[in-house]
Image 1 (cartoon, rainbow, N blue to C red):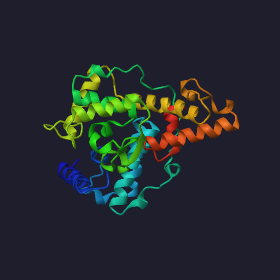
Image 2: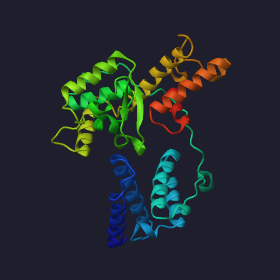
Image 3: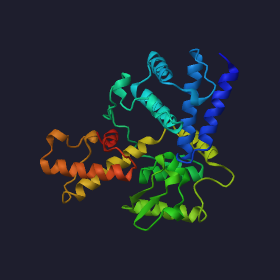
Image 4: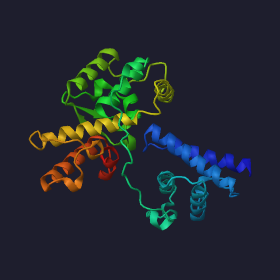
Length: 298
């Protein structure tokens, strides 16, 4: 393996993402890390590219074969291909990766959960850092992603009846609105605005986003969790019950993964209510694909 060629290739990847203004900071970081890993793996097979622009279709197939030989999950391989597709579009080579995963020998991804991953009975007081404690409470009460909860600026987001997440805070850079429907949500927003200076995010003045994210991850592990994405699951399930009640004259029900009605047990009216509730939750949680809410609701 030529270390000189690999070093040059990795630098070309860094330069590509360094001037990227489309992706959020975290997504850009994750994509750059993933593409650098793919390039390193290519070099490990004896393919010594010196620049990301030298990527060819045969190299994509080599990577897929290597990932499959490592027994990676299909979902993991598809996530890596998604990163490669993004890069190929940006270097003018979108055609070297088929848009249809079936043509690459990969089955379609399903979003059917095998268990309920929701985190209930959550105690935020286990987090000693006041900034991180407020961030995890935002995840608990509004279903925010980690990056969104860290970059959150209450004085800008709070619009009275809802919160508006700016594009620079969100995954994929898509702004969205989440309604304020509970007293706990209102109390949390008031607490943040009382604690954090106007115009400031939940990142301390002496840290940047990456440093605060590392501190967040460390505190989550100390608190006994692998991650807190389960708070997002719990939020979605709670919203489902509230929305189905609102749409059915207070005859709502739990989500299927929580023991509620299964689709085959629903009446036509209930199926329509289920659909409307899922569409609303998908919108609030920032998912462009309706099918993804199955992960949270079953």
